[in-house]
Length: 367
Image 1: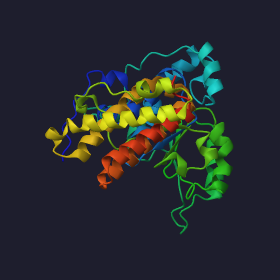
Image 2 (image 1 turned 120 degrees about the horizontal axis):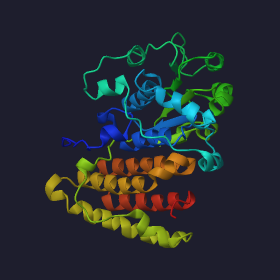
Image 3 (image 1 turned 30 degrees about the vertical axis):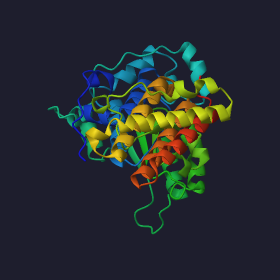
Image 4 (image 1 turned 135 degrees about the vertical axis):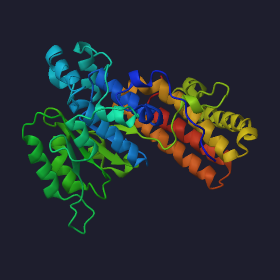
């Protein structure tokens, strides 16, 4: 079944530093990264989870473009002189208590009035591309875009310790560019413990004007020492689109179980009731989609979007909330996959709702 064309929100260009198509496809990631930039809370490292590698690359490259494009780099360069100390804007340590402390003294920056040449070009605008954006688009920038991966000449799929140490040495040199380092496969099978250990200090305290983007399908496949030094941002396969939202009654998981507090049994009963509400809502769409699996997928996306909107601002500032949203997305994808493979829909939704309740209670996001 073809997905219908997604309407572009009127404020897409103003609300994001990314191109309008990427912003619609990955609204949550675009909002979190743009919001962190505007609030002066960019993390040292972002772990982008999900299966859509092309969108992960575009998020990283367009962030690199914004921070280096001749149209937009004055945004952070001016912010350094206007809002001291500079490291609070770029390269802020990402522990929650640091966010809280910085929040007391940090002034939020205005939404950027301009987007990079690369973002404009990807949006379909006619633009005379600046040199930095052209190099970034071609993966050929000599200073601002680095890729850390297995060496091409070796049979091993692992990132070598030598490569990790060489990256640290490269980043120790001064540069006028804002540098983005991409670890395309951050899973522990590739970014294994010896190479990760060689880069951990740099990952935690990178040089000025340096940021990491790490890619993996899920956070569980990445070493805990790497995850703890990163902010997890989900890059979902199914976009959370206003233009594609089904007409449904208000379905809020948060409202369904928030009164349960720490009482797990009560929360699970509420979760089961919620799963029945999801199944019933999906039934109302079957006449349109003529397919229960598609209908369930749309309703699950709908209720996830409500939860993502509830916690989006907090996720910009807290590792706990951003990790919760990434884990929740994985639970939802697993539930939809089970329904796609003809597992009983009622059983799949009940299992998903109970797992969601357990996750929300364990990570204390019900307040």
